[in-house]
Length: 428
Image (cartoon, rainbow, N blue to C red):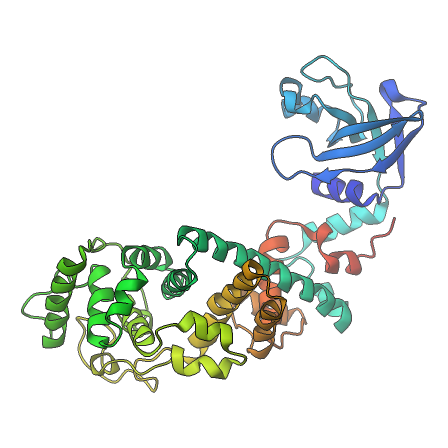
């Protein structure tokens, strides 16, 4: 209920605002409802309320019943001392601050259709309560909001990139290396992949990029996968172990513990052993891959860099210790779908963050264009929206819908969603 009241107050979509209690009979005018506060403290900051001709500037707290002020313990919290108005559906008792000052109150009258909207959403089935109504949106309504959601998604991801950039001492090449290595964990092993990248600086890989064998030894050994190799292992694996021991001593490396990565219940094609071999091939074939991404204009330009041929061993093995066999048409390379996901989740956010840092608007536009040129993702969220009748034609659409689900649907922010407003015709 309070989420509905927050929206109604912020948008001023109420029928009436009636002064009650000590404020009864006063003339109350809302000049500015204030700024929504999602952290601890009053619900709205810096509101401007004119009471009997006198302008008050301060905070506003909102409850269904005024007595909830005491249920929440606000009478003991001095963060609420600057409240200038208590907005409630029902004033069942006056409230006072920790300083003993009574907070003026107004009862808010909500239009029945607002309650109808809240009831309909609360009765919705599954993760998408409005699914049965989305087909009523026209193409302009759908894509107008999705364009904004895509920008929100890029801004959030660019913020993550900037954090990696700061932790990389302002080196963009190291930033890209960590981003790419982390993504090769494909969710279940993202964190250990990031730890691996931080423990094995890019400069060390670059010194040995002419040797695919040495790159494999560095990545697999530093990940802790070569620590338990014995004489029963394949000759190639034993050679990798011996090479890593030499390089470990040369650079003073300390490998990750052997249990850092999750290995159980992972499909063979997603084996961390295989992923690191693919990463080794990428760095072997492209020294400055981050720079290449900045210069590229089309997804096809980058395919040779992200889908290079792996070494002979990995063309017939999924892991260091498994038997040789047929492993599919990619011959150990990443799949076309994985390549597209790397462009979506690594390259485009990297371009956008770089463009913001260097103030290059055209590069930011290129990041958006990259989404538009790529096919949409096919995951649970996208299938959910497609089933509801939403058009999903590109990665720009799928990324927008993921942002919608993550940023609005799962947290119940239906009243801040442009589709929700359109569907239920919220009017003042």
